[in-house]
Image (cartoon, rainbow, N blue to C red):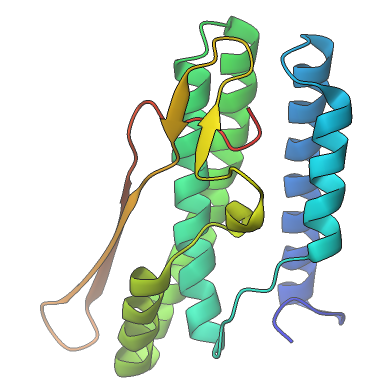
Length: 193
């Protein structure tokens, strides 16, 4: 499958991507635990619940999977950046800036692959993008209270809400330009907050 075992450029990318996402989770967990911004027992129970139930995005095609991860990485980048910006904590802000930078690189990688697919198989790529825009859901959607969260310290509630857009234009044959965007409210909380 798309994210399985094997050798070569793709699977090496997937391994690196997974390792970077794991590093993000570790630094966020450590920061929240050390600053006493979260109950570590509840955090671990939530983590175990999520891992035991698993996550399987229903992507009938590779193009649909690529569209999904492009949107997911962009939405995650915006969520992390907003969380850091509005945390009133310079350490949290620096952590979130670093994570958001990684998420942006991930999004650019997937966006560029989709841009290439638009040149090779424009109809299939556009169909995959449209299908994903209509059904988009973050992987944390299965976590209890994922969409409505309250910051542990301030108690401020916020919806994790976003609008995703993908635009492709073709001025001349073979000249496909891709633009991706996510609008997220500045009050969005990182799902792990």
